Length: 173
Image 1: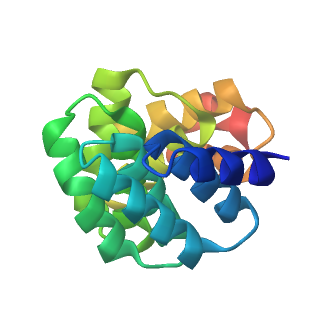
Image 2: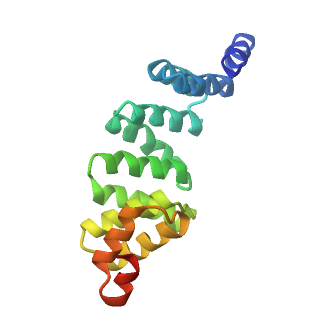
């Protein structure tokens, strides 16, 4: 029904950027990402500062494994909206998936520290990055925080058992 409703809204008002983005979102759900990106581009032609259109375009590109293109779309959005924390997470994801951990952690840390973004996944990824960089104290705290959100992640228990000595580690082992 969203597909039909957004198409109707676009026919009634071809300059309705919100309807165009909504339609683009439906196309993403239908796995029609190229068409969705065209809709997001159209919305951005109408409303160049429409940050959600840029975010959704970058997300569709991420889904298509076009990580550098996603970064190019997100950078000006984040320059103009330094408190757009969901876009920061997506920017971090674009770098992380390419194993550019130094760049990824900067975006993740900003969203975590300044945006209050907290989740098991974010903490787990950040802990992993710090772990690979040899920053065990930061990694341990983030692994433990990840478990506070989701206590079922077995790999974290294993890693904490390796990182923590003695009785502290025994709990996780």
